[in-house]
Picture 1: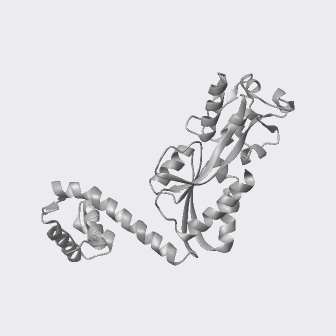
Picture 2 (picture 1 turned 30 degrees about the vertical axis):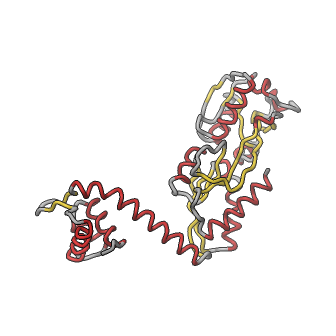
Picture 3 (picture 1 turned 60 degrees about the horizontal axis):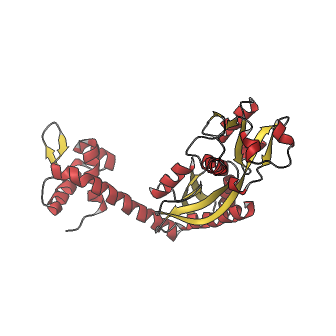
Length: 298
């Protein structure tokens, strides 16, 4: 006798709710039908999975060991079914994207619009997070595609396309750096800095560049998000370093952006996916659009 998804879902529901009644309600089954499924599963395993009495239901030792395995099996099977449905009909589906906030607020909306015009029934789940979280979401298969920055050391992540995003200094329009034709490392460290927090892709590039140059900056503030960094520059708490593509720069007319004349201040930006995993057709089509956008911006 073979396992089936209904039996696995029944086992997980009872384990999570601790009740046959509540599990049956969750699964839209009658309680006798649920009981039959659990008994069938116990026959396959060859032992009891639950200790039952009139008041409670609890997993046996074997049931506790089996639960995480069943949950992973269910997740994997549902993912396969999701991919199969998407492959059978590329005009429908959901594209899950994790992206750097700078990309999500600048380039990503136009990419989404392009695919939506071609496939109006496609929906999108967008997670705008820092690079380390983008990588985590792709690795855990919580995102089909990721737009991340910095170096990729994780062997489970495959780079579909790589480009570069030049960093620039953002300062008030009457700041001394605003009038300089070329800005180098010495110019940067001569002023207090507002740098995005450790763990962001921009910060990784800046830290590496300054360390290689042997310079120790004065850092006044370390916000997570670029818009916060821009607000702090507007309040004259320091100057910040952001990607030239960041839309946050153009949101403040009182500030100017000046490119850094140093090749060390290039942020790698990449479109990635989980290695060894095929993409649904809609995600494949979206990946092509993102690659074109990255090529135009590099």
